[in-house]
Image 1 (cartoon, one colour):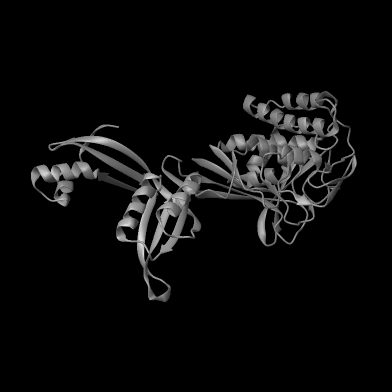
Image 2 (cartoon, rainbow, N blue to C red):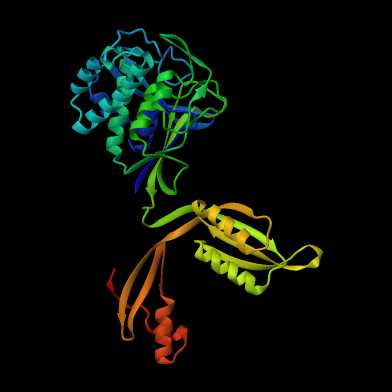
Length: 406
């Protein structure tokens, strides 16, 4: 699956997302030229190579009527909250976007991102969307950022976009309404439902434009998935911090969910030294019947040189309380230890095969570059008994049977 992963450890702003996306393309200047060819009125995209904390990447300046729009921006992330230009309503923005001659898909995406911003501004200021004037995000540099990101993502044509939790920064920000807390109210509203955090960096790391683009495009927020990376892009902000001020993107292939799986299981452990073998066997039976994924015992030495038994039970989180109750009921322990574990699972399927010895049910497991097959024990045992051969011989004589049903 073609996947784009966005590292938002230093937040997200439109210019940084644009630059990171451009950095993913082999011919960055050609793609920047395509953006300029879109003909956004009075706008020029200017891509420049920069370095932050020794890491090379790109910064995208948006030049509007000959002036760099972020000359007076706060905290270096690309959007001043009061640009001093004529304010523009949603109708004016729609008019500009529809005159660009974008593909229907890109035009729809651009306007949908703006709707997220308009709805947030409307709720924050308590006025209808039709009365919102985009003094904070509606000026031409924001138009340029959103159009660029939507256009470049369409060109990449990825199957999934994942992102890290979003660092929003801290402190306060100056805007047309006065001094507001970080994240700005509209940004905070757009980011509802998205995992965000502040790790003490003083500044506005995520802007309303960056938040809206993430909200619209990102399918899930998680740690970086297992993927084979084909290209890496760095989109740099203007301001310098102790940490590299950038959005990092990784483009590559992830394994299809049907190939492998990963989940979390619980391991419950207890030590006993006063249970008979029969009691331990019965407890094991009851735990399996109660839904345990695995139960096993290990001989251990305990205090006062007593031989004892370590009982370990693996179960799912949603069945944990039930299993804990069964352990206390069927063993003599008065304490249980818990460990959370990740497990990696091959995908599994079953099929039936006709052999000279009758139908055999086979389990096939695959993933992580490997494939395994195993016949059901009961079928092998039946063949071994009927043919008066060993279980191993029964397995050998039915190797590579022809599947007849799935």
